[in-house]
Image (cartoon, rainbow, N blue to C red; front, side, top):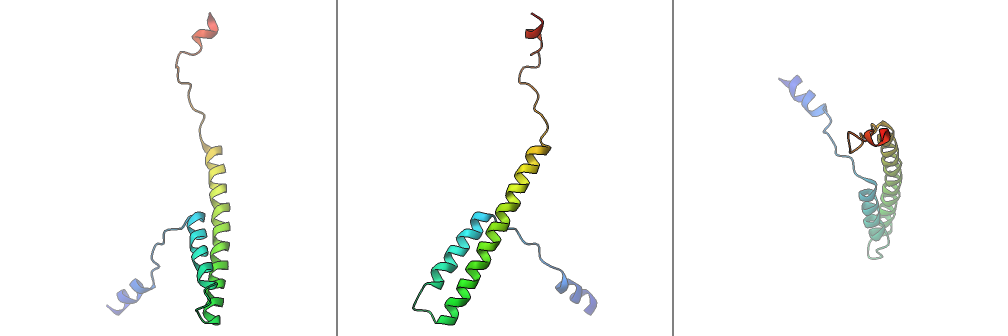
Length: 92
């Protein structure tokens, strides 16, 4: 029974990836906290590091989204013409 409990704890939870825009919003919130002079200096420094981290994640997410869009466009099959008898116009 102890083995079942330990394996359940070691399994990672599924995480929903954030989009680049969401990372930017989080970075902006941390930036706002980093510039709050009512907070101690070490806390502001930690918030500034977090803002930098989320800006990095935003740039990675943006590149990933761009790559996904370009590969999706390349994989997209050519659409059939809207008129299935388009070639009849060529015969006239």
